[in-house]
Image (cartoon, rainbow, N blue to C red):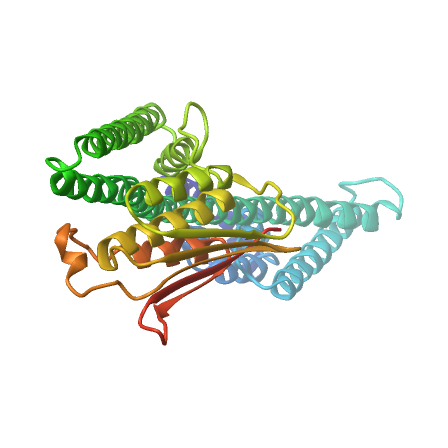
Length: 410
């Protein structure tokens, strides 16, 4: 509608200006009017061909037509994606053409006596008119074009940022899923360590209780008391673990509106030792751990080398769990075998080794009927490697089994 209205006004203007042009050129009036209407209507295609519109306006300048078409055409040309040299060339041509026509027209008027000003007025009028009809539309068009390009750049940048945010959200979801998987694995290791060790000792004591129940009632009573204590300890640890898991789920629900990744991290921090979390075992409890295995009938030799000192909680927990799981495996697979537990405090690391001799008789391991899921060594390796340590396990030349681990203490 805007282009059509401008083209209509330009056609009317050029048609009206075609009347004096026809008189000066000595042609019929209708020819001048038709010529002006056709020339002025070219403004209708200013957006598609701005260069053509400006060229037409320059071409009809000597006939003193198309002032509106020249102004609008120069503005459109400057605002479009046209090389600056083309804009400068066409604007210079329009400026020069308007200046020449105005100079000639004003000089003719002064020669006829229509104007009585001095000779200085002729160049002044030519320069002022040409600049007034050329400079404002060109400058305004350049400003509008630059602003339009800036808005398009900002819009593209906003779209790019939106895509990046969407990509970050997808990556956050992937990280949250990874964090959930890691936390499930870690909790599975904790549950395995808690259940396997306690229940293994309970089964060993129950088997001993069954063997001595009639011929040694006092020892049977002691074994029964040990079974009860270990059962209560196992239930307490399981109850604490389940409580932490429920607390982690509550945290996940509370922060679900913020981020799934933050929820997973919050739950992991609570399980790992954050607010209200359960503190894991430490190396100071190693004597008690060895004593429980000794009470179950295992001959255990514990030796500690180096200066005893405290470590980070995760290092002490990992070292404790490695020894615990190794002793549990001895109960399962080499019942009655003598076992050596060695702990070495070094300058920048802590090393531990659990080695058992061959079992005293074949089939003794099956007497207590202790099942094995095959996850103990895998869990120990994962714990140690996650802290940057080294884990090695395998049979010895003497027919026993050795588990060794070194964990950096820095």
